[in-house]
Length: 224
Image (cartoon, rainbow, N blue to C red; front, top):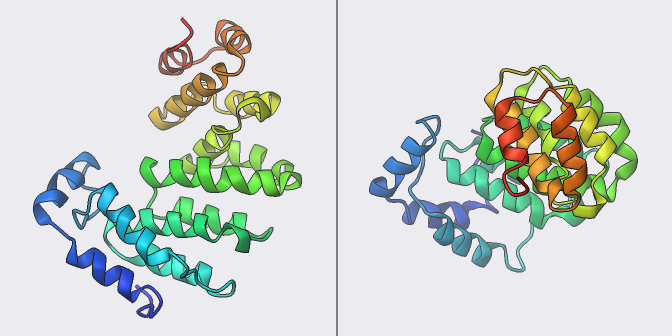
């Protein structure tokens, strides 16, 4: 853990004051005991955060270090808050911010943090810097790191009609025959989401691609 953040001290104190060991135990169990929890449920955590962040953003120079500090704390709620702080600071991002997001994806990795970073932060980043997509996404889809590959597949979840279908197919094809649950689930999830925009294309891909049974089920869940 880094040096105590003066900026974040009031938020940290309020989170600790709201902690409940009785609440923390089932949270930890749900996450397979991979992380410690304070036991602050999402609605209360967000209320605390919103009150703290109102008119109280960090400086452009300091925001990444403040996020890193939150990320370094042992309780999982602080990683969730770090992601929310990244979003609050989105006007401070620059082209190199994507490397910071990958740093977060690779550290304390699990679906709860990675999916939020991928679909919210990374997704938004590439709408601001679309020229960076070619540099990153295809290489990510072949990365040795499971969660980086998952990010390449799901970062367009919120794009709707603006989804780059060709790019999504390339990322899927680079992960066919994977035995990883979280990759096959991501493929199905991305296809299910795109099916809301273009069900015929998704049906066609499922019919002619050697997807896992999990991916197929997820992809066709709402279109038959």
